[in-house]
Length: 434
Image (tube, helix red, strand yellow):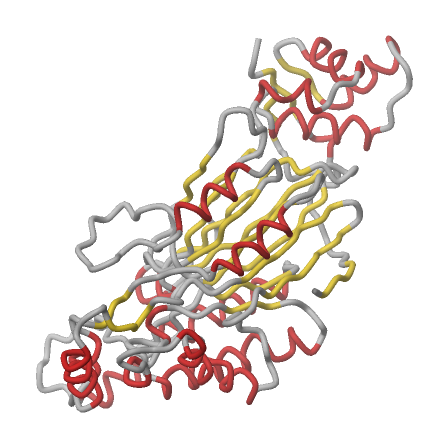
């Protein structure tokens, strides 16, 4: 485990923010629809290809420029860097990411994580009957590609962990492999397994290799890895961030496939959701940007599953927000999306995930000044006027103390703040609950 302290700019001084860049599936080598409107069918294809922007290059360039203005504290890659197990495309994708994004980042000892995706596995290398001691061998080519670039950031046969500390705020990052069962052969008679393996190995193209019906695309976690995560997620005043390729909840789009869901995903999801510490489960695989929240009665915190879309379509920046004392408040997911011709919209679509409800507010922040603050707001008030009123009627509060209290109440759905990203002097505070 690596641990270090980080400092970076935060627009709202009343909260501490830990920022993460989440990149979903890349699928280098996957056929893509052209964005060029070719009316002349005899137009030279070589010229047309040179005039079309590469979606992966455009997305990475946009992310690099974004991080230059507003740095993040960690980079999360959710797997499927290549398409249908093509190792050459995987290596080209890693080279591009290393040169454009990760090389200088990791040289500065900044954390980055990658996990395998089901499309990253070369199925011709999977044995017809894999012994237990060999189940991790199919991931070794991926590890070697990263090691060649001196970037050992991929989590295959272990759980990679990292603790981010910023002031009193703490985020525990855990990256683990969800592809343990991918590419394995079903329990058929040995002669049929052998025949299927020979068919896959001799297939003329990747499509035939990938559609061999006796090789499963069955995602699964190692039980030992789940145990490691379960031990790490306990603790107060922190947020857990778990990175894996596959979704824990069934995807919204109906899917017909053998063993389509994570074999032990329900078990893992229950462990994360029943923990009393907020957990963000970051994944790819479904090529969508869904956010789904799981809560359990009696547990004040929640588990939020955050999916990053296909990189062609965009990526996420996740901001985890804390009080200045380090109490987790919630997370904002900024979805940067692509418009026509692979041009990014400058303003992201934002979604907020409160870690606790309004009913938990006074239980978590049981302190008289907070009740006095709520009473003094009435239907609405400007921040300077509220500070003056409380300091006339009660013990003195600093501007930062009141700003932190207002931000806590806002995340719990009790108050609303207009001009939230400006300094507190410009805040207009609204009462949202009776």
